Image (tube, rainbow over all chains, first blue to last red; front, side):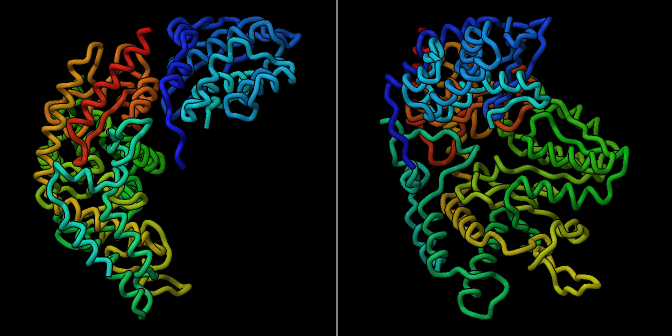
Length: 162
Length: 418
């Protein structure tokens, strides 16, 4: 199978300024001492390793979140954008973002409209849409989101993208 | 028969400088650039002679080996066993009985761990490896240690990526039942001083297994002169097909070892009361083997011999020198693995850019490098890094490939300094 040649715009789209900014200065980076939920995300392919902390209140609202670890620009930026997105949401809404985001990156949902129909506007997360053209990097972008799901479900095993 | 086309193809080879044309995969463009394939340490490309020999075998000569009395089975057996002879000659094995087909280096090491070591290991015994090993020369030993209560010991490396020989020597005591290490490090490119280490181990009657996966494609290997007890390597890193490898073992050892797997072909006589095992090397080759893989492996060895391993080695040493020199001029580069004796590859980091991002941008420029931990996580831990980018060379690479890499790194810097 031959994949279409990439051009310069694809690359600039992947590494747009917002992504590089979040990769260099990730938001909500560090430990969360009073976390109620936590999970590790590991991408064995490239060694990305993120630990995500969430404080989920009794009303299922994610009242605070943090992450630490190391990874490529895409995985770190995605984790940072995830934090910005899910803090303040209840876990059901966070799961909806997960489906919409992963769906968009893996081509299961093609257009903005699909997301709006599902009541989800990806907002800043759309900055990661350039990853679609780089199939080998989709796992980097979704790693933090898989870890979020693990954390919400209290999985003991680390989340992986495999 | 396939032998004929194979010889013809080898005759077409005019020299290493021009051998790139023998590799169909290297004539393509990637993302609008001529491909610069710098990941042969992971898996190498195949010359047309290997591809054609396998195809010819599949078209005309295939049947099961060691079984039928008919013509095709005879041809298949000749091709399969003929390849074994040529591979054995290539590494100068004393006898074809010492050349065991496996699915690759990994299976070869597991075979030794399970049949040479496991039956004799006792709690308190030790297996000694080094810090620069590939996971395939770590995990099989961890498994056998778990099974027997033996202990895995690791000889340290220094910042250049060289094994600390004096420390290694000090670890060689009566408790050590096996010393296993790489001929060439897949992550750092370090060439280990085999003869010296093997002699030291043998002076204490400790058998030695060499993981030769990263050495055989790049330099002459003579198992008799090395005097190693076992030597493992893979076809797909030396221009042959995947799923194929060799365990070389001294006959005296192989004779004593029980079979690794049971099945057809590894037996002389089976009754429900018991089974008599076949002679070497068949004792270790249960079931219908990877016949086309062996045939392709033989063609790969023919190809290498037509070029001459001494010439391959000196060509690559010069090219590695050029690669290291050009990389050193890149601002913000950090070379990982700077041993005095190195072969075929250079790991590196650029500024604080994650290797994975670097690899994506380089691919965009048509440059294929490996990024990540290279199945050598302990090496990455030693340097306190999550991974590296690794440019690895083979006989078909040239200065243009290196120049494309350097140019690609310029593009990486441009994107990430924005």
